[in-house]
Length: 465
Image (tube, rainbow, N blue to C red; front, top):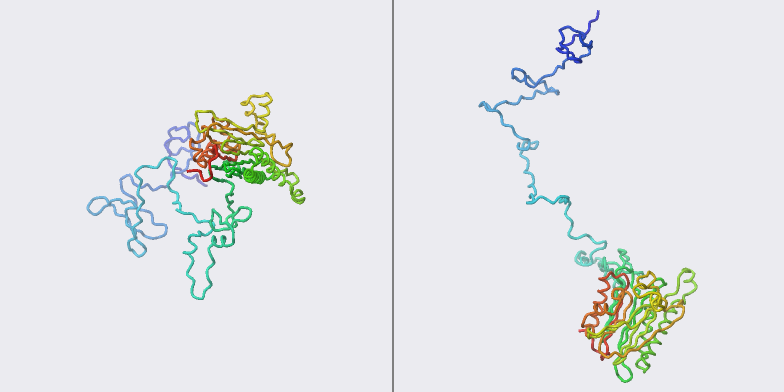
């Protein structure tokens, strides 16, 4: 008959640890089936009880590898080497070349969170178009009989009568103001303008928020019939909610400036000449609305171009100002101990509230409707009412003609005087630059334009030092 497999003797029950006797098949205390106890594994300990090392098992691949020595032959143990300390050899037994030197360890540990394992950045990045400075030197010399090399891209663009891109210096700028090579938008000529005409100077800047400059100015010097000098300054601010405000301000400033420069030498009184100049500017802006029928069909929701205007005429003893809209004229005396003054009143919602006694000036200009204008030049203006006024200052000073892009940051006459340099009468261009910088430092939320006219008018030829 079959027999149960013999189990190795177990000294204690695996379940309750009751001592067992040889031959027990069940635990006498708990009845545990001792036949379920697995046999002791047939392992090969590394070191026997007597300290002798057992013979190694034969290699699985059948190769009889030599046993390692346990001493160096003098009774001392064989030294142990790390793998990196043993010299390496190639397949032919020759020593391997030495490894490359490790990079120097920094003296101080890197700051936490900063990585130093990025690849080095190139000193120069390749341009989208070939560098024109290298075109001539990089081109191979033409061999005899070979066709001549094509001219450099900038030279070709300039030869074709176009402008060269300020970004890649290789492409031609198209009529829309973009480079045909890299597509970079080019700065517009009106983004920043400066002009000095004798003792009169003006500066206009796009500002920091607007995508274009919608202001324009016109300055000049002329002579009255008796030979006395006269200075002229016109500043216009395009109405951003209207169509083509930049064209409107440019047309108005040119028309008003040209009329003044023509009428004053003929003997027209400066105040009458200023009135006529505002009318001429209005006609020029109205003409922009006379578009072809096809243009109106393509843009049926467009409105008429519009702008504001402010100007000043300065002679030896007379100061004349004229305006429509919310651009202003300030008077700043050379002697800063005497008070400055504002010479114009805004055509705006805030000014109307103050004039009607419904609000004080602080409340009116804090309202979101404060800068809504009630008078402007344009075909859709309610009614054109040119404002003119004349003054006879009893001391020298400087006339400040500006748009709201400046006086938003120097609203009161005292603030305007504080922002203007003391030598503005002798250096009007420098003074205008400082005032524009004052507006840009304040935020530059609008286009900024300012003209400075010293009073009394000085003969032509005098100007900024």
